[in-house]
Image 1 (cartoon, rainbow, N blue to C red):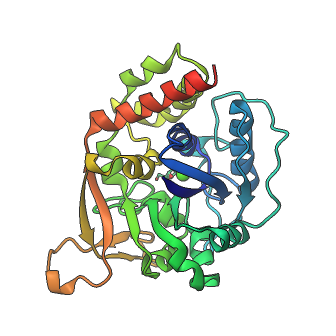
Image 2 (cartoon, rainbow, N blue to C red):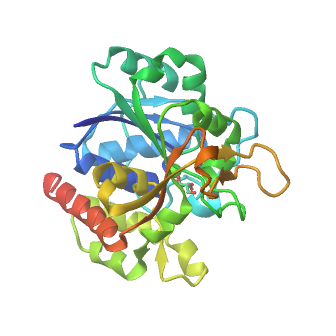
Length: 312
Ligand code: BDR
Ligand code: CA
């Protein structure tokens, strides 16, 4: 059983990743959530998470973190996630409240008290994670690994060469990638390789509580793919969660990764050293390259099924 903290900015795909994690609570012991500004403002993404918790009757602790990147200004993503950050599903407001503890204080307390190591699943910009590592370096030894959705081996999405989570706070990403903690990077290529076909989404249409939420999330989230004429879409944030559950489904490489924090065209690029010079490898990250698409999508539907039965 692996203890995890999910650091997120929900976000459609964040919520789907969270559903996969909660459905697998025998393998992943979810200690709590921390939220960070990214897809939308900090209050909005936190509110989205609380609404989903109430929808299922969950009450995991939610601790709010930073409301803007370390240095750069906040740049939210209404084009991808709407004005609320989770447009599409109509969910009731939640009576739940965040813990009142800052995210990095929640991380400090949880890690200090933990008997076993903790894994971070970071599926938003890395502001909380970076500042936690900077503020409490002595707690690094309590971290098993940091599984990140972010970056890309060759390409980006928000920019040609930069992926949104890293682009949004490259300075924080640099701290995380240089910290020496074991990093697993699920960049855009592996996420695209696990894409769900738009026709597959339809299977959730008449399902239970979780399937309905998934379907409603996807109706908004898939618009981007439809506008581009694609027959599939990546549910990015599921990738590090599914990797923790099924590493055997993935192809991966150990590579040095540097973060471009400035640059006219490449700010936020994860510069992955793909040259293969063994002598040059200094501080390798586990870079996920591709995944068995059908198995990946099966895990998502399996998770929805589990939750549909639990919350009928
Ligand atoms: C990442 O950016 C956000 O829009 C998604 O939630 C995901 O974490 C994909 O680039
Ligand atoms: Ca996200």
